[in-house]
Length: 347
Image (cartoon, rainbow, N blue to C red):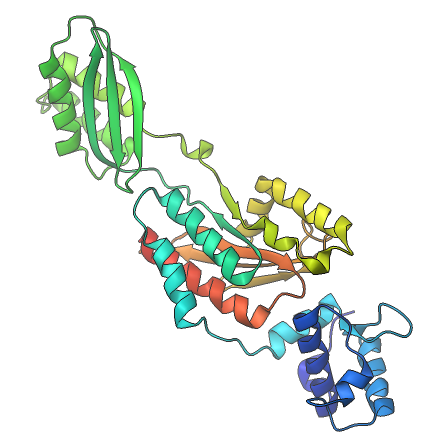
């Protein structure tokens, strides 16, 4: 049953509904009529409050886990709250600084993404997840160092700071000057280009007779490029940090749900597929409980936001996974800020 528009609820129904949701998100426990009638509650009798609670339950917005217990919001109720009533709280200066420090750290982009996911996990008390952009690496420098008469070490540096070492075979008796010439050519002519761009440039220059390389050095350049980087499809598609945050005191009574959630997190490709659904979103997306099939059984929520390069193209997704009772008003803008910070890094 679709939830009613928030405007169709009476003022007192909205007030009571908000108090129930706020109380549940804060404690994880059902909220009873006595609590609602107490300090900071509504100026109604417990009987009147129970009547409104019953109406909200009939609308599918609240549920009573036990006959005599209080009420808690359903997934449908949480969706109504998130879409129509939630007032977001911007990240604090300290939170923004913590995120920006991790984004700005030097080194391979995967290291910065992992560190950013970890700090987002710590700040939100959820599991932090980030999809690694599938970008073809760009060359910055290559040095070929002789190891033996028939082998050389290729030291490859990417524009993102990544360093890779590969051993390549070389023809016996090849002079050291050929290694130096190949290294200088790649650094001077191919720096800033992707593997496919570099290979295309070499072939064009050779075909047109414009290449200054002799046959031996040209062969070395091709060998060096052949070992450059990992295939994009072999790079990690997803980084997950902070799964231990999902094991708090409130989970001890529902260990089966936590087991299901941790099993889901182990299936990184399925999580990546779920986050892929947020790639085309203009803003942060929120999946509550069974709204996504992957975490339907564990009753978990996902908050995810795409991050873009300087041309505005979506290159990845960052987010958190946690219980449905997480602090949406605080975490949503935090994820959004993280996505914006990663966009500056990628750009």
